[in-house]
Length: 64
Image (cartoon, rainbow, N blue to C red; front, side, top):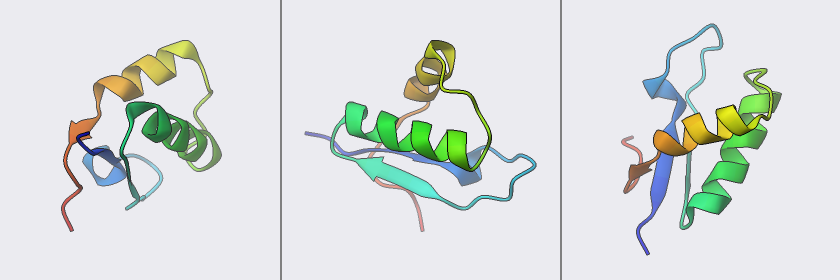
């Protein structure tokens, strides 16, 4: 099973966020990212948001 991640530093915006999230499954990562995105960045939990996020997942681990 390949680890997946997404790093907020790759997506600059009004909230200066340095959080990187990773997980062993896409489903686990998706749920963590949706929770972070809605609570910290103010996104709405929509099907479109989830589809967009899933396309941005990368394999491996975030850089330090």
